Structures are given as C-alpha cells and as structure tokens.
Image (cartoon, rainbow, N blue to C red; front, side, top):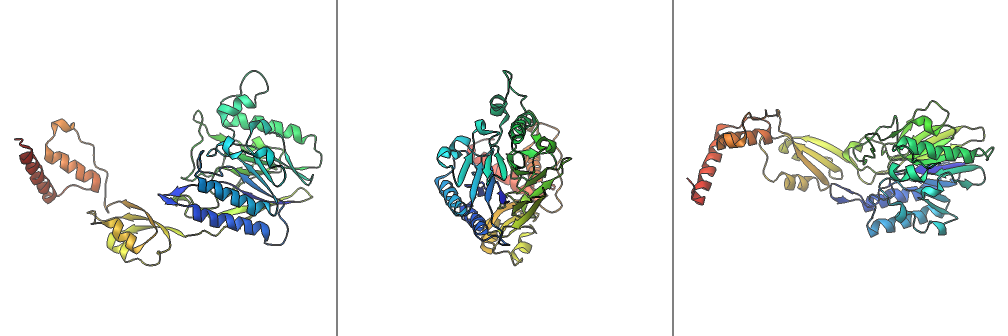
Amino acid sequence: MRFLHTSDWHLGRSLHGVDLLDAQRTVLRQLGDLVAEPPDGVPIEAVLVAGDVYDRAVPPVEAVTLFGQALGWLAEHCTVIVTSGNHDSAIRLGFGAPLFTDRVRLCTDLASVGTPVLLNDEVAVYPLPYLDPDAARLALATGDEPLARSHQAVMAAALDRVRADLAGRLGVRSVVMAHAFVVGGEPSASERSIQVGGVDSVAAETFAGVDYVALGHLHGPQRLRSATRTVLSYAGSPLRYSFSELAQPKSVNLVDLAADGAVTVTPVPIRQPRPMAELTGTLDELLATDGYAEHWLAVTVTDRVRPDRPIDRLRSKFPHLLHVGFAPAGRTEAAAPGLPAAGRSPRELAGDFIAHVTGSSAEDVELAVFEQAYAAALTEAGVG
C-alpha cells in the first residue's frame, strides 16, 4: 500500500505582506501531478493531509476556492483524507463531511477519534483532528472527570481509542494522522505556539503500536526517533513560510507499507515557485550585488548612517524584496540611562536616542543640529 503524506498548506497566508495564493496553487498543482503520475509508476492509494489546511479559522474566499480545486486534482486519482490543525476551524473545514463518503474524507470531529478510514481492507487510517486540550479533555474522557489539561493527556487518550479499535483488526496495517508537537521535533519561526500550561509537546512513545504516524504542525520535514518500531514523520509545509525556512528542503512523503511490515518513507522534493535569500551589507554593496532579481529577499543594511530612501532604491534592484532591516556596523547596545527623562537635558536625551538607533555614540555635529532644531521649535511655540 502506498500513500502520500502532506500537511500545513496554510492557504490564505501572506509573507511580509505578499499574497502567497499563486505560489500555493503552484505547489499544490505539483501534488496533483505527482498523484496522477507517481515517479516509479506505483499507484498512490491515498493522500493524507495532516492539518492546517488554512492559515486562519475564517479563511478568505480565494483560499477556500483553491482548497476545492486541490481536492479535485487529488480525488480524481485516489482517496483524500484531511484532518484539521490548530490554525483551522474544525467546524468550517468539516462542513459537508457526511456527504463526502467516497473519495474525500474530512475528519474534524472529536467524536470520530478511534474510527478508521479503511483502505482496501488492508490499512486502517486513524485521522485525529487537532486535539485542543481544553475541548479534547472533556470529549475524550472515559469517566465523569475530565482528562488532565495537556497535549500529552489528550493524545494518550486518543491513542488508547485507536489501539482498542486496532485490536479487533488482525493483520491490518495502521496509520495515525496527528497534528501536534512531538518531542524531538525541530520547530521553525513560522509556526504558531500550541502551548497549554507551559507545555506543548507529546512523547513519541505515545504512538506505540502503530505502523506510521503522519504528523503535521512543524514546517520542516523530519523523521523522529522512537523507542518503539513506530515510524513518526513530519512531511513539513510544501511552501516556505518564513526566512527561518530558507535552508529547508520542501517535500512531501511517499510512504510504502510492505507486506512484511516494513515502512519506507521517501521524500519527494517540491519545487519552490521562487527562490529565497538573505543579504547583508552597506546600501552601496547591496546595490552592486547581482543575481537575486527573482528571489524573495530579506536584506540587512549596515550603513553607519541610515541612507536616503533605502527601500525604494533596493526594490528598484530587487523587485521581490520583502523585508529590510538595519544593523549599523560596529553597533553596540547602548547602556540604559541612569536618570529619568525629566532629570536630563534635551542634549542628553538626543544622544541616548541616536545611540539607541545607530548603536554608537552621537557625534557633536549631530547633537548640534538637534540643539538648533530644538531651540527653533521652542521659539516657534513661544516658549523660553
């Protein structure tokens, strides 16, 4: 049995104010092409989307439209199983789920935890919607008392249901879809924290007894270590969502479950619609740099004095510039002033401000200009 594991599409997301919908359409079209024509000709029986389909609970209309298109591309060739993530509204994402009983399965209801989607009576896929502890500790409790308010407690309860159902399915392989931060995972800057009570993690051993765990939430593709035979893997996001992901190879997981019990995970690279890079230097050095006209770019300008119109000048050279930061060369952290502002002269306050902005002591000529401007302002206001 072969299936494709993906997650964290975040449809509707922007990057430093730039709409990513066209880029998202490009990478999802690649998933559709991959399912239509697998790399070695072995058919893909299912696509598993492990949460965070949308970037926010109320997605823009264009994002909903793209999701519908992507489902069409994939469901034309195989079964598609989708779970909700912490960014999704489970109710909105799961709308119409009872009507999609063949090729498309939208699994967002906590009441369905422990109920599998069966693929050819060979593989039981257990789709777990995002288990928010505040809701899941009540929905998954077996008695009158709610579970502990933690990701570990609710995930453990969900896996108890999975193992109980699996015990009656001898010879059937098992897959769990989960959206969580599992211990050992390496986060990126673009993920939203799911901390509850100061804890956001689940132990890998919680999933013992399952063949493969298709994880979502972390944007970097990675396989986790476990003391059990269970294979746990994050497919990661198919598109880069922050400059912290610049070095991450974006991919989806092609997973083969062999008859002898072996699990083989093959990452399939996803071509990025646009390369990404970070550059650092003075404005003149940056403007003399070639080769980045097609990149999404983050730039750090190191001039001692902030140049005139730096963003406009850089964007004329780099049309896809997304972010400009300033870090003057030789900058040091200015010491906190010893007196409150009310007890200090305007010249001292100006010196502190310049030091804070530039990272170095103000020059006499700068302070002189400030004093002249300050005196002119007082004169105009009729003060002094």
